[in-house]
Every structure is written in structure tokens, then in C-alpha cells.
Length: 273
Image 1 (tube, rainbow, N blue to C red):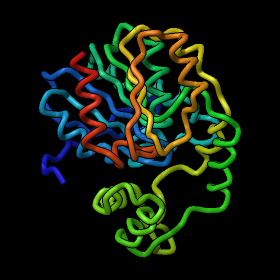
Image 2 (image 1 turned 120 degrees about the horizontal axis):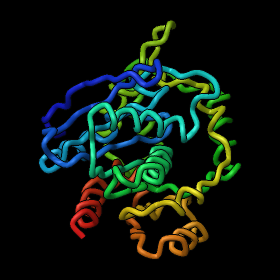
Image 3 (image 1 turned 135 degrees about the vertical axis):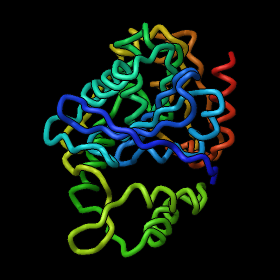
């Protein structure tokens, strides 16, 4: 693991205490990182540390996740998440932003970039499209309804999740374990996120936001993921002929974990183009 430690910061977003991590010097161009559903800001640690040599990187714990406040029922729409990004940007006074999001975070990045084209230079979405079908939202709801797994140790947590994804290294899951879980009343370790997020994890289409994008746009897709089908890729290209779509071999839904070197390389190429 890279040994450069981020700074823990907080800001108020309409009464919610939102946690984020700062990597790098504020004089560098800003890069905002938005994580996947049920994840947290440290999922970006190694990537953020590497990019912090050239960028002022801010990785947010989105509301209801990690060390940010829980917002409660009805407050976890894509637009709700994007409103927190807006407040952070205004608070710090950021401009010329590179905004990157994975999965749900990618849709949040899309919405923010569409709403604030004057603030963003580059938009990057990691393995997520403009459409969330009913099958995806129902599957997530079913998993939450069945109850989150609980573990006795960080190591047990890491081994369990690596068992579901052999493409990523054990150390990646162990780092995530230390930041993704909390001690439950029964003494076990459980996920550090608001379970009611699933109530707003509903089928949606965001093509009206795609149509408003004017900045440089990179869509990254893992070859082992079926989240962004050919039909969505084709429509992206029809709406935005200049969009760049790259596929990462042997990567699943969370490319930054499965193929970190290729993930970083493609992003650096995009930013330099």
C-alpha cells in the first residue's frame, strides 16, 4: 500500500455531516472521487495517492456511507448525492474539476457535471450506465432485506469478500474492511452504511442528463461485468459522439480494485488527450 496518508475533513450539507478525504496540495487541479453503493471513500486510496502528485484529490463518503451522516428515508436519490458535491465544491471554491465516480458514484458524477458544466472539465464513469434496470435495483433490495453478513474480525471480512472476487488482491479487501465496517451492538462487525439507501435505489433513466453533458467524457467498462450493455453504449455514442469508451480486460464492476494499473493508465491517457 502507498504510505501517503490523506487528511480527514468534514463539511455541513443542509444539516448532514459529510466526511471526505483530501490527498495532495490545494494548488493542484481538483479531482473529486465518488464511490460505489455501500462503499466508502477509502476504496480509492491507492489511486488517489498516485494521482495526488498532480491533482488535489477529494474522495467523499457519500451521505449514508462511511463516516458521513445518515440522511434517512427518501433522501438518497442521485440528485441528493449530487447536492452534497455541489456544497463541497462551493465551500472550497473549486473550478476546472475532474469528477470520477464508480457505479452509483458515476451517476452522481454525471448529474453534477450536467448541472454544472462551468465547474467541470472531465467526467469519468466507472462501469455504470444511464439506466438502472429493475433487475439491478430489486437484486440490491433483496440483498439488504436478507440482512448484511456479520464478522468477528477484519480479516474474516476481507476473506469473505475476496472469495466473491478473486480478481482483486486480499490487501485491497483488508483495507476496505478497516474503513467499511462498524462495531455492532452484538460485538460483530457490520457494514457502515444506512440500510434505507435501498429505498431510493430504484429503476431510473438519466439520459436527460447525458444530453446536457458538454465536458470531456470517459466511460470505463469491465469485460467481466454486464452492467453497461451494448445498447447503452450505443446510445451514449449517439448522444455524445465524442465520448471515449474503454474496456478493461479481466475487470469486473469495480475496476479500480480489479485492475488498478490499467485503470490509472487509461485515466491518465484520457486526461492528457
